[in-house]
Length: 140
Image (cartoon, rainbow, N blue to C red):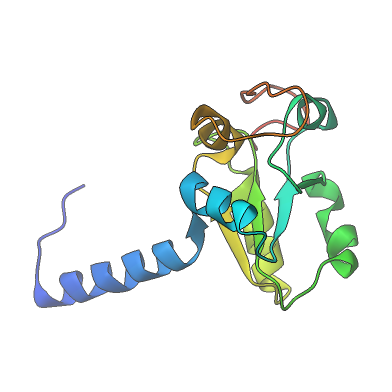
């Protein structure tokens, strides 16, 4: 699908990319937050098995189906970054949407756990990158 560039579509593109940048975190930025010990809440939405094999430091593992019940444990005044498996996984977008609807400051980690691990950043656990799996806790 092609869009004819007009003043209106250019203005719409500016709004879109400003919002995209505001609500996404990249692996480099997340690693800097962790290294600088900045206050951030990180939620890993992958399976518990993959979380144990490797996860972003300080991340807590919460299954998407249990995320709403977990919300009282989060601080609405602290940025929350959610992630799942990889660039094709939609669990983090679904989780981010739920958090935003409930009034939390939230960003999605672009590329998920795999993008963070592939950059060579320190991970907790067995340091194994993981890919999307089939089943109830897949990339939804």
